[in-house]
Length: 544
Image (cartoon, rainbow, N blue to C red):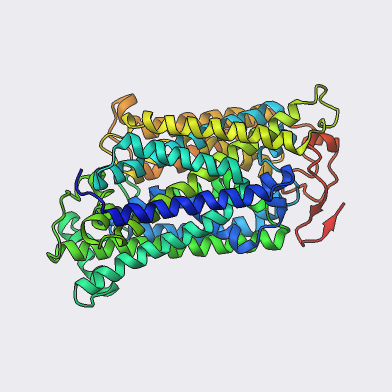
């Protein structure tokens, strides 16, 4: 323990928890159908969906790691992320969202079922559940470590409290409660950054961004001999703007296409126009929040390097760097204000946890409903909304428990690495095979189910091999920035090569790929869970 919170700080955190409980109760009273619970009746305002997406994707991992990473690599991550986000916008706006919004799916993995078959669909579901459990477990663990070490609360207590609270209000409120709660959390995250920067400016005599930036560039040159590395193809070079931008582009590309936590937000929009607006909102909110977090890191370097405070951590140690931001909150900010900023850290964690839990409940409920039909060519059997919601709540409760338990078991593989390096080495290994199957399904019409499955498996093996090359093969450690690009490259190459030998049936292609989207689907409508109710072509016109 480094410091302890004052009673005013605990009161602020308790007030935040009470607000979450109230929101869960309020939205639970409004639920009248399964469509309301899973997709908020597809009537969530686009700006709320956009803010919800960025709150889901950022989490406490970004909120804690970004200011600390400035000590490790300066403004490299900000430049890389902005480059990745601006590049991905073209693909998401004009390809991914228009294509997926043609289908009235509840689960993104319904697409894998109609494109490749039920086995591929189940592989997608399994990969997604593993992705979420490990992702959320790592979110809880990282946040709990920070709070435990800087605030004097036992690690086990923080993990348990966050896991239980996040699970309870997600079970009660459904996706509408999750989305509106995440809007609140974006406001808290922005407020936390602004408060910290304002305090540093005030306490250092009115200094601001140019002063902080210059101090950071000088500090980085004194450590590495250069302030920022723009391009490097050395696989052992920890980070450069190009390689980090590349890995973030691949991550965003696969996330917006194959991660139910994000795709479910688009499905909750009323139409294509609203979905696009929500994405643009998320993209620019992401740039703003990531910029503010980097600015916080710049401010903290100036603050401690100018002798304003004593930093009881070694920023050259990667794991210590993750604790610099929360340490500053508790060490320097006044009582009450420290609790408010710490609440922003908690909210960043909760925003991702509840999204993951809700997404697992949604996906497994859709799969259960489909399996209720014994004969493959029969319609999905009807089920009362109350039964569907009840099952989803049970699954949500179990998922929350698994995530909480995963947080206790993830500590061993994180030794010696910081948060930024561990994200592609842990849960994102499951994202690459998912992204591989969706990309092949949508953009490679000649790829069949077996080729897609083999490609996904090789993408996963490649991700693990690069991530743990040192431990598995005794090689020099490969930079974390090459894990995701390497895995997706192997997966797509395998799928394209496999398409020469494994061709899909005509009904698995017509209307179901980007290049055949204008064709009439030749598959029984009931096989896609009654989801293909109406389509939008590339010009936005509705077709029956």
